[in-house]
Image (cartoon, rainbow, N blue to C red; front, top):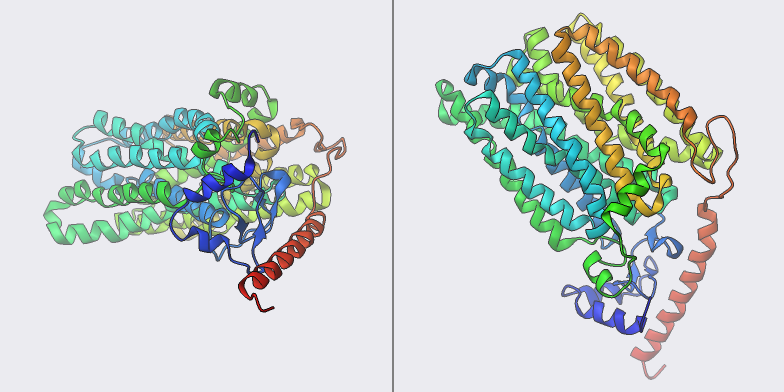
Amino acid sequence: VDGDVSNNYEQLVDQCPEGHENENTATDSSQHWASPDSKYERYACRIDREQGDRALEITIFTCKRPHMRSFHMAWFSFFVAFFLWFAISPLLKEIKDSLGLTNEQVWTSNTFSSLGTIFYRLIVGPLCDQYGSRIVMSLSLVLTALPVMATGLVHNATELYIVRLLSGIGGSTFVTCQYWTSSIFVREIAGTANSIASGWGNLGGGVAQVFMGSILFPLFKLMYGEENSSLAWRSIFVVPASFAILTAVFVMKYSDDTPKGNFRKLNHLGMLKETNIRTSFRRAASSINTWILFAQYACCFGVEVTMTTGAAYYFSDVFGQSTESAAALASIFGWLNLFARGLGGFISDIMNVKYGMRGRLIWQVISLILEGILIICFGYSRTLGGAICSMIFFSLFVQTSEGSTYSIVPYVCPRATGSVAGIVGAGGNVGGVLFLYLITLLGEYKQAFLYMGVAVICSSVLTLFINIQGFSRLLSGKEELKEKRYQNNMDRDAIQRDEEGKATEEIEREEDPDD
């Protein structure tokens, strides 16, 4: 850091929210010293100074700044954005009947929804590298809320396509969420942290199915009357859109970009390396590993997009379920995000501890193969019970594959993590577009799910070609760069605790002059 670090630190403390001084001057042994150039004096969790004060642990049941506050803001804002993105899905049958659309037009609108997100995800990553997560996340929420709110104004298929294309901005918040959590936690637990945050965020799609289709829509129909169901679905979208705008305000005001502070202040103090969007994107795009993960993510998140977008319509069309019932059944797929994606990242981290990068790659292969097999089983299910059962299991491995993929992302190009996350995330939506178009093109669900399953199984073979410098490959190589283990940091933490104990004794002596 150029200049007087202590002066910079004092300036930052002066600009902190009211009450921050008391929070940081606490001498509780559960708090840990921050680096001298941090906005904060102490943290509520163990950190690694060599990785920019990133956290070494995930203390889920706390919301203290900066680490866990940012973690919870990341997943919750992502949750709200995904809720917006899929808010229309459980109501497609009602919209189809009201506007007089065909099945092909309904599935085409789904394709537009996923298509819009591809572009947004590509640009959001580099924007995070330059401006930080808070600004990008807040802006994305507002820009998603506006077209969602306007959904009630559509009168034909073309207008529906436009609204769904623009609402795809909500899908880009996944990249921002992953960038944010990667900025908060060390790489050794990045797989678990990223997977939990993204899993809970993805849950927004499943909650939208139930809340919009089985709770709000019947309530609005009751308000307007059964004969005015069109008015019910047209006015319902104001509710989630308004909540998203409120969430954007909270994200901007009550969270941090990094453990040491926000990008704007850190840039002003010269504490961050200047990042060029074009350079960041070029670094990420020049790695073959980025594009392999792009293809594999297309075969897991692409499947999730397809199911979250069209499952309610599928259950209505194939098994004759009502709007409310189909929405409830479709939500099951999304509810597994509560734990399944986090499980995928956690298993990847455990495999990494035992076998290094090879362990992560082995789990990637296993998860993708099982996902592909179960997709085929779902497509060939002839009964409602069989379809629900197979959907639960294939949803489990769709999400463990997503968690596994993003546990590898932080290693690909550490200096352009945002851009890598953006490109890989865009792959998920490319997969969604292709799979949705496949269903539209074939018009036969069984054949479409067969092709999807085979594509997923084939994508697992690409893991053979992942080669990250300094780490082992699937079948060869060794770990040249030894990752830090928790025990290595325990010694550093013991030193910190000793320093804290001495500081506490000094403060007590100052407060008691008779001592």
